[in-house]
Amino acid sequence: MNAPDSRHRFHHQFPQLGTDPVGIEAVTSPAYFELEREHIFKKMWLNVCREQEIPAPNDYLVKDIAVLGASIIVARGEDGVVRAFHNVCRHRGNQVAEGQGNAKGFACGFHGWTYDTAGRCQFIPDQEVFFGVDRADMGLVPVRCEVWAGFVFITVNPDAPPLRQYLGGMADQLEGFPFHEMVRMHRLQADVKCNWKVFLDAFQESYHGRFVHRLTATAAGCTEEDPYAHVTSVRLHGPHRSLSVPFNPTYQPSPAEALSFKYAQSLWLHEGSAGGKVMPGINPDKHPTWLFDINVFFPNFFVDVAGGWFFTYHFWPVAVDRTHWEYNFYMLPPKDAGEKISREYSKIYLRDVLREDLSTVERTQAGLSSGAIKEMILSDQEVALRHQYKVIEDMIHGRWRG
Image 1: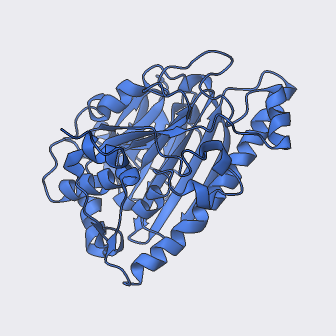
Image 2: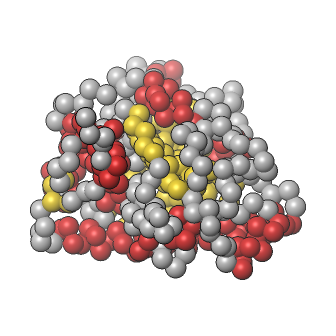
Image 3: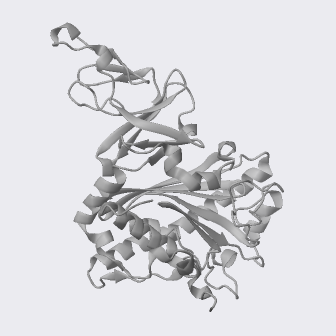
């Protein structure tokens, strides 16, 4: 028997994904987008924030989710429990909260109906003129809300499985990673003219690195033996997926990065450990030249991890060719001035890499929307994209079996 062709190793590992091209209607058809809205986003668990963003009793934030057509309040009650509600007054539907902050409750600016941060209706002005209205029945409409590893998820699907069951092997893989020890260093947002999957695709393969990042990150992953920084391993966890990206062991840092590394661990250098301590949940296949893991929580949430840092992406669909993107970068807090300088360097370096990534997606969407091509051709290295499109296709047509 012939050994599997190493050029197509992931096809041999995941033959169920096939090798066919992907039709562009998945990223250009308004009708397909509506199917995704109904069968994906209204059915799945969606991450909306970290608990760190609402740390104290009565902290809250409002998350407007266009693809759901909903505004969601996420609040920590006086009892410390995190809950979620539709941002809709029970009287005549006016929104009762906006932004983020700390408050004893929410008062509708239209007619003064008032709610506490546990969603209970506290006051109805002139209540006696209503007909059989009981405040106990007039609380904010709840949204299912659960927390895993400090990440707050919601779903509008009453029949969705418990969050931990939904996360499955992805949560198993990341169990023990010290998310709670890290603090947010940087945040970026952008409204971008492309389909949410086109945007997401740019971040779940390393094939583009040699070209898009030729002036920044190419040398950190590409070598003479592996000029396209082939991902070292892939794991599929139901609808979720995880990839490991290689590190170039001969990488020579720039003078600025070398100075940063002199005082603390820099972004790309020796991230397999932080201060000599190997962190759980990273490099699951123990590859000797490992850089970081790309972890995609279906449908639209990334948690990419390394030693000493992680970052998240959210790709929020707005329309078939519009996406709201959010990025948050977390690191271990600096212990001294030298480490603070290093953290700042890492923040700015990664910001510039992301700007390069964003430079491609609107032009990609424009090309796909032109009708010039009917299919996207995927290589074995683009196995994560292939998995994504198959999962979505199976879900919207009722074929998904997990």
